[in-house]
Length: 147
Image (cartoon, rainbow, N blue to C red; front, side):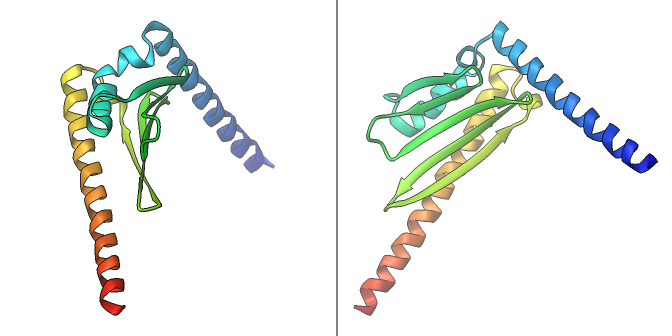
């Protein structure tokens, strides 16, 4: 019986902690919007993905989408539990690639760190796109050699 009380107490504590962190996120975003807080990151992503011609849509207080009509990619940024989650959707030869990254709260306090972190993420995205293209090129070459 005591085990059930301990387990239930732990579950309640975890739920309260998550609730408290979400309230804190909301307060953070009331003081400074997603766009204002992460404009360096949003602009770097827009420049990389769409040569600065993408659109920035704010779908919720904590979600920003960078996209361009009829483009083969879109990027979603979600501020959750004081971390910034970046999910990059990229379509190449009818195959969708999802590249997810998390910027921890201790990596986003100032503009210099934001520039550094987003540069690393952009390099990772470029590398993953390159690997995917090379795999498809090898596959297409193999199919072409067989026929």
